[in-house]
Amino acid sequence: MKQLGVGALGLSVLPSVAMSSMSEHKNALFFDISLAQWSLHKTIFAKRLDNLDFPKTAAETFGIHAVEYVNQFFKDKAKDNGYLTDLLRRATDHGVKNVLIMVDGEGPLGSTDDNERIKAVENHYKWVEAAKFLGCHAIRVNAAGKGTPEEVKDAAIDGLGRLSEFGAKHGINVIVENHGGISSHGDWLAAVLKGVNKPNCGSLPDFGNFYEYDRYQGVTELMPFAKGVSAKANVFDANGDEANIDYRRMLRIVKDAGYRGYIGIEYEGKELSEEDGIKATKRLLERIGAELS
Image 1 (spheres, rainbow, N blue to C red):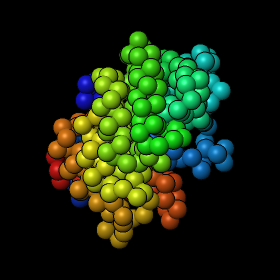
Image 2 (image 1 turned 180 degrees about the horizontal axis):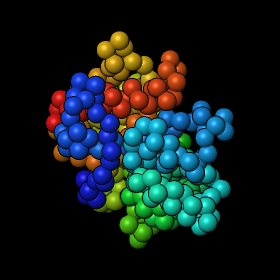
Image 3 (image 1 turned 180 degrees about the vertical axis):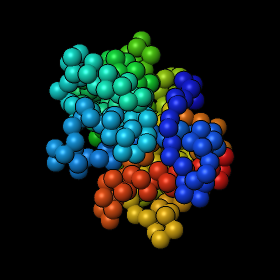
Protein backbone atom coordinates (compact mmCIF):
# COMPACT_ATOMS: atom_id res chain seq x y z
CA MET A 1 0.00 0.00 0.00
CA LYS A 2 3.01 2.33 0.38
CA GLN A 3 3.22 2.40 -3.39
CA LEU A 4 -0.51 2.78 -3.95
CA GLY A 5 -1.47 5.26 -1.27
CA VAL A 6 -4.24 4.89 1.26
CA GLY A 7 -7.94 5.54 1.24
CA ALA A 8 -10.06 7.56 3.59
CA LEU A 9 -11.67 5.94 6.59
CA GLY A 10 -14.10 7.05 9.21
CA LEU A 11 -12.58 6.12 12.57
CA SER A 12 -14.42 6.39 15.83
CA VAL A 13 -12.80 8.40 18.58
CA LEU A 14 -11.48 7.09 21.85
CA PRO A 15 -13.36 7.80 25.05
CA SER A 16 -10.34 9.73 26.35
CA VAL A 17 -10.53 12.12 23.41
CA ALA A 18 -14.27 12.19 22.97
CA MET A 19 -14.22 15.96 22.42
CA SER A 20 -11.95 15.62 19.40
CA SER A 21 -13.47 15.43 15.95
CA MET A 22 -13.34 12.29 13.84
CA SER A 23 -11.08 13.93 11.29
CA GLU A 24 -8.67 15.07 13.97
CA HIS A 25 -8.49 11.56 15.37
CA LYS A 26 -7.99 9.97 11.98
CA ASN A 27 -5.22 12.40 11.13
CA ALA A 28 -3.49 11.48 14.37
CA LEU A 29 -2.85 7.93 13.11
CA PHE A 30 -0.02 7.01 10.78
CA PHE A 31 -2.13 4.20 9.28
CA ASP A 32 -5.71 3.48 8.23
CA ILE A 33 -7.83 0.70 9.68
CA SER A 34 -9.50 -2.01 7.63
CA LEU A 35 -11.58 -4.99 8.73
CA ALA A 36 -10.59 -8.52 7.76
CA GLN A 37 -13.69 -10.56 7.02
CA TRP A 38 -12.31 -13.55 8.91
CA SER A 39 -13.04 -11.62 12.11
CA LEU A 40 -16.70 -12.47 11.46
CA HIS A 41 -16.24 -16.03 10.18
CA LYS A 42 -18.40 -17.61 12.90
CA THR A 43 -21.21 -15.20 12.15
CA ILE A 44 -20.94 -15.81 8.41
CA PHE A 45 -20.69 -19.59 8.69
CA ALA A 46 -23.78 -19.51 10.91
CA LYS A 47 -25.54 -17.59 8.10
CA ARG A 48 -26.26 -14.63 10.36
CA LEU A 49 -24.38 -12.41 7.92
CA ASP A 50 -24.28 -12.66 4.14
CA ASN A 51 -21.08 -11.82 2.28
CA LEU A 52 -22.91 -9.11 0.33
CA ASP A 53 -23.73 -7.30 3.57
CA PHE A 54 -20.17 -7.31 4.91
CA PRO A 55 -19.34 -3.77 3.72
CA LYS A 56 -22.51 -2.40 5.33
CA THR A 57 -21.71 -4.15 8.62
CA ALA A 58 -18.15 -2.85 8.59
CA ALA A 59 -19.36 0.72 8.10
CA GLU A 60 -22.48 0.80 10.26
CA THR A 61 -21.54 -1.52 13.13
CA PHE A 62 -17.83 -0.76 13.44
CA GLY A 63 -17.27 2.60 11.75
CA ILE A 64 -14.68 0.98 9.47
CA HIS A 65 -14.72 1.97 5.81
CA ALA A 66 -12.21 -0.45 4.30
CA VAL A 67 -12.60 -4.23 4.06
CA GLU A 68 -10.57 -7.35 3.33
CA TYR A 69 -12.61 -10.20 1.87
CA VAL A 70 -12.05 -13.96 2.29
CA ASN A 71 -12.60 -15.92 -0.92
CA GLN A 72 -14.21 -18.94 0.75
CA PHE A 73 -17.26 -16.85 1.61
CA PHE A 74 -17.99 -16.36 -2.11
CA LYS A 75 -15.80 -19.05 -3.63
CA ASP A 76 -18.16 -19.78 -6.54
CA LYS A 77 -18.62 -16.10 -7.44
CA ALA A 78 -15.16 -15.13 -8.70
CA LYS A 79 -16.40 -15.01 -12.30
CA ASP A 80 -19.98 -13.95 -11.55
CA ASN A 81 -20.05 -10.36 -12.81
CA GLY A 82 -23.59 -9.83 -11.57
CA TYR A 83 -22.64 -10.84 -8.03
CA LEU A 84 -19.43 -8.81 -8.06
CA THR A 85 -21.28 -5.79 -9.40
CA ASP A 86 -23.77 -6.04 -6.54
CA LEU A 87 -20.97 -6.39 -3.98
CA LEU A 88 -19.12 -3.40 -5.42
CA ARG A 89 -22.31 -1.32 -5.45
CA ARG A 90 -23.03 -2.12 -1.81
CA ALA A 91 -19.51 -1.21 -0.78
CA THR A 92 -19.69 2.04 -2.73
CA ASP A 93 -23.11 2.89 -1.31
CA HIS A 94 -21.67 2.69 2.20
CA GLY A 95 -18.45 4.55 1.42
CA VAL A 96 -16.38 1.39 1.87
CA LYS A 97 -13.06 0.74 0.11
CA ASN A 98 -12.43 -2.83 -1.06
CA VAL A 99 -8.81 -3.42 -0.06
CA LEU A 100 -7.97 -7.03 -0.88
CA ILE A 101 -9.19 -10.62 -1.19
CA MET A 102 -7.63 -13.33 0.98
CA VAL A 103 -7.35 -16.42 -1.22
CA ASP A 104 -7.18 -19.96 0.16
CA GLY A 105 -7.92 -23.40 -1.25
CA GLU A 106 -6.65 -22.82 -4.78
CA GLY A 107 -3.60 -25.05 -4.62
CA PRO A 108 -0.01 -24.79 -3.32
CA LEU A 109 1.98 -22.05 -5.02
CA GLY A 110 5.12 -23.61 -3.54
CA SER A 111 4.47 -27.15 -4.77
CA THR A 112 7.63 -28.90 -5.92
CA ASP A 113 5.53 -30.68 -8.56
CA ASP A 114 5.68 -28.45 -11.63
CA ASN A 115 2.23 -29.37 -12.93
CA GLU A 116 0.56 -28.91 -9.55
CA ARG A 117 2.29 -25.57 -9.02
CA ILE A 118 1.34 -24.20 -12.44
CA LYS A 119 -2.24 -25.36 -11.92
CA ALA A 120 -2.30 -23.53 -8.58
CA VAL A 121 -1.02 -20.36 -10.24
CA GLU A 122 -3.74 -20.56 -12.87
CA ASN A 123 -6.40 -21.22 -10.22
CA HIS A 124 -5.55 -17.84 -8.70
CA TYR A 125 -6.07 -15.92 -11.94
CA LYS A 126 -9.82 -15.56 -11.41
CA TRP A 127 -9.24 -13.95 -8.02
CA VAL A 128 -6.80 -11.47 -9.52
CA GLU A 129 -9.50 -10.52 -12.00
CA ALA A 130 -12.17 -10.36 -9.29
CA ALA A 131 -9.93 -8.15 -7.15
CA LYS A 132 -9.43 -5.82 -10.10
CA PHE A 133 -13.19 -5.67 -10.70
CA LEU A 134 -13.88 -4.81 -7.04
CA GLY A 135 -11.22 -2.10 -6.94
CA CYS A 136 -8.90 -3.98 -4.58
CA HIS A 137 -5.17 -3.43 -4.68
CA ALA A 138 -4.16 -7.04 -3.94
CA ILE A 139 -4.92 -10.67 -3.36
CA ARG A 140 -3.41 -12.37 -0.31
CA VAL A 141 -1.98 -15.81 -1.06
CA ASN A 142 -0.03 -18.54 0.72
CA ALA A 143 3.49 -19.83 0.08
CA ALA A 144 2.96 -23.51 0.82
CA GLY A 145 4.42 -26.75 -0.50
CA LYS A 146 5.87 -30.11 0.50
CA GLY A 147 9.60 -30.66 0.61
CA THR A 148 12.65 -29.23 2.30
CA PRO A 149 12.63 -25.51 3.10
CA GLU A 150 15.05 -24.90 0.24
CA GLU A 151 12.98 -26.94 -2.23
CA VAL A 152 9.77 -25.17 -1.30
CA LYS A 153 11.55 -21.82 -1.40
CA ASP A 154 12.65 -22.36 -5.00
CA ALA A 155 9.19 -23.58 -5.99
CA ALA A 156 7.45 -20.67 -4.24
CA ILE A 157 9.71 -18.16 -5.98
CA ASP A 158 8.64 -19.64 -9.29
CA GLY A 159 4.92 -19.88 -8.42
CA LEU A 160 4.69 -16.41 -6.91
CA GLY A 161 6.71 -14.99 -9.76
CA ARG A 162 4.36 -16.41 -12.37
CA LEU A 163 1.28 -15.19 -10.48
CA SER A 164 2.81 -11.76 -9.93
CA GLU A 165 3.42 -11.41 -13.66
CA PHE A 166 -0.27 -12.05 -14.27
CA GLY A 167 -1.21 -9.70 -11.43
CA ALA A 168 0.94 -6.92 -12.86
CA LYS A 169 -1.07 -7.02 -16.09
CA HIS A 170 -4.17 -6.19 -14.02
CA GLY A 171 -2.55 -3.73 -11.63
CA ILE A 172 -2.93 -6.16 -8.73
CA ASN A 173 -0.40 -6.94 -6.01
CA VAL A 174 0.26 -10.51 -4.87
CA ILE A 175 0.97 -10.46 -1.15
CA VAL A 176 1.99 -13.38 1.04
CA GLU A 177 1.00 -13.88 4.67
CA ASN A 178 2.97 -15.77 7.28
CA HIS A 179 0.25 -18.41 7.47
CA GLY A 180 1.63 -21.56 9.04
CA GLY A 181 4.32 -24.07 8.17
CA ILE A 182 7.59 -22.76 6.85
CA SER A 183 5.89 -19.49 5.80
CA SER A 184 5.67 -18.59 9.49
CA HIS A 185 9.45 -18.24 9.59
CA GLY A 186 10.12 -14.60 8.77
CA ASP A 187 13.61 -15.17 7.42
CA TRP A 188 12.39 -17.88 5.02
CA LEU A 189 9.48 -15.84 3.67
CA ALA A 190 11.65 -12.73 3.32
CA ALA A 191 14.14 -14.79 1.31
CA VAL A 192 11.32 -15.99 -0.96
CA LEU A 193 10.14 -12.44 -1.61
CA LYS A 194 13.69 -11.32 -2.32
CA GLY A 195 13.95 -14.18 -4.79
CA VAL A 196 10.73 -13.20 -6.56
CA ASN A 197 12.01 -9.64 -6.79
CA LYS A 198 8.94 -8.10 -8.39
CA PRO A 199 7.47 -4.73 -7.35
CA ASN A 200 3.94 -6.10 -7.05
CA CYS A 201 4.88 -9.11 -4.90
CA GLY A 202 5.07 -8.37 -1.20
CA SER A 203 4.12 -9.46 2.28
CA LEU A 204 1.16 -9.28 4.64
CA PRO A 205 2.79 -9.57 8.08
CA ASP A 206 0.36 -11.04 10.61
CA PHE A 207 1.12 -10.22 14.26
CA GLY A 208 -0.02 -13.62 15.47
CA ASN A 209 0.96 -16.32 12.98
CA PHE A 210 4.52 -17.10 14.00
CA TYR A 211 4.10 -20.06 16.37
CA GLU A 212 7.68 -21.33 16.86
CA TYR A 213 9.28 -18.12 15.60
CA ASP A 214 9.77 -14.81 17.41
CA ARG A 215 6.84 -12.67 16.29
CA TYR A 216 8.66 -9.34 16.61
CA GLN A 217 11.65 -10.56 14.63
CA GLY A 218 9.29 -11.99 12.01
CA VAL A 219 7.35 -8.77 11.54
CA THR A 220 10.60 -6.82 11.37
CA GLU A 221 11.89 -9.14 8.62
CA LEU A 222 8.67 -8.92 6.60
CA MET A 223 7.93 -5.20 6.88
CA PRO A 224 10.35 -4.15 4.09
CA PHE A 225 8.03 -6.03 1.71
CA ALA A 226 4.72 -5.09 3.35
CA LYS A 227 1.75 -4.05 1.24
CA GLY A 228 -0.64 -4.78 4.10
CA VAL A 229 -0.51 -5.62 7.81
CA SER A 230 -2.77 -7.92 9.82
CA ALA A 231 -3.47 -6.99 13.44
CA LYS A 232 -4.28 -10.35 15.00
CA ALA A 233 -5.98 -10.29 18.40
CA ASN A 234 -7.27 -13.08 20.64
CA VAL A 235 -7.29 -12.14 24.32
CA PHE A 236 -7.49 -8.76 26.04
CA ASP A 237 -6.40 -7.86 29.57
CA ALA A 238 -8.13 -5.48 31.98
CA ASN A 239 -6.33 -2.51 30.40
CA GLY A 240 -7.62 -3.29 26.92
CA ASP A 241 -4.24 -4.53 25.69
CA GLU A 242 -3.77 -7.76 23.75
CA ALA A 243 -2.56 -10.17 26.42
CA ASN A 244 0.01 -12.00 24.28
CA ILE A 245 1.08 -9.42 21.69
CA ASP A 246 2.77 -6.14 22.55
CA TYR A 247 0.88 -3.85 20.18
CA ARG A 248 3.01 -0.86 21.08
CA ARG A 249 6.14 -2.75 20.05
CA MET A 250 4.46 -4.11 16.92
CA LEU A 251 3.15 -0.76 15.75
CA ARG A 252 6.54 0.82 16.41
CA ILE A 253 8.10 -1.78 14.10
CA VAL A 254 5.45 -1.05 11.48
CA LYS A 255 5.92 2.71 11.71
CA ASP A 256 9.72 2.55 11.71
CA ALA A 257 9.55 0.56 8.47
CA GLY A 258 7.89 3.57 6.85
CA TYR A 259 4.54 1.82 6.40
CA ARG A 260 1.54 4.12 6.03
CA GLY A 261 -1.12 1.81 4.58
CA TYR A 262 -3.98 -0.25 5.97
CA ILE A 263 -3.76 -2.34 9.12
CA GLY A 264 -6.49 -4.96 9.06
CA ILE A 265 -8.29 -6.06 12.22
CA GLU A 266 -8.39 -9.85 12.50
CA TYR A 267 -10.00 -10.91 15.76
CA GLU A 268 -9.95 -14.65 16.42
CA GLY A 269 -10.58 -14.83 20.17
CA LYS A 270 -13.13 -16.85 22.10
CA GLU A 271 -13.61 -14.84 25.28
CA LEU A 272 -15.34 -11.93 23.55
CA SER A 273 -17.99 -12.12 20.86
CA GLU A 274 -16.78 -11.38 17.35
CA GLU A 275 -18.44 -7.96 17.49
CA ASP A 276 -16.93 -7.04 20.86
CA GLY A 277 -13.54 -8.44 19.86
CA ILE A 278 -13.45 -6.33 16.71
CA LYS A 279 -14.37 -3.23 18.68
CA ALA A 280 -11.72 -3.98 21.32
CA THR A 281 -9.05 -4.43 18.64
CA LYS A 282 -10.09 -1.18 16.98
CA ARG A 283 -9.87 0.73 20.26
CA LEU A 284 -6.42 -0.74 20.86
CA LEU A 285 -5.16 0.21 17.41
CA GLU A 286 -6.54 3.73 17.77
CA ARG A 287 -5.08 4.23 21.23
CA ILE A 288 -1.58 2.95 20.50
CA GLY A 289 -1.60 4.41 17.01
CA ALA A 290 -2.35 7.87 18.42
CA GLU A 291 0.46 7.50 20.94
CA LEU A 292 2.99 6.67 18.23
CA SER A 293 1.83 9.15 15.62
